[in-house]
Image (tube, helix red, strand yellow):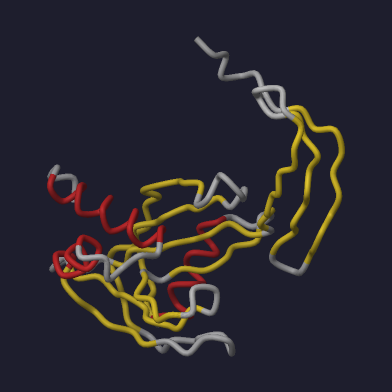
Length: 186
């Protein structure tokens, strides 16, 4: 049995390849677990990935649609964004929900933590459930051209199952909330 506490990778050297305000890319010269020499690239994220399932008493949720530059396609997602590592992620979640949907929630519950692509990055996501909602005006960032829709949790679940929602945080969040409903925990 492998010792889960021992890192089998050995770092020989590293160099920063690229950096901007959101990410840093580092290339490592390594000895891999099999003893072979090679390289490994790591994308370090400077923010938490924050996702919010805004759920009303009728089990409706809000989705945000936007064109995503990295995948060159339109994407339906739960409200989400980045939260600086030095700030309470819940405060970032509250800000993102208001910015993107205009919603303010009185009740917040953390429902999931996840690594989003741990083969190449250290990006860490936190998903919240927001309940007891009140509607205000949204305040999108200048880089966001958003479409907001409210639909039943079941409709969003079917969008996940059919592959219409592919964003990893959204998929995990919708499946998690659906499971909570099935288990009678909501």
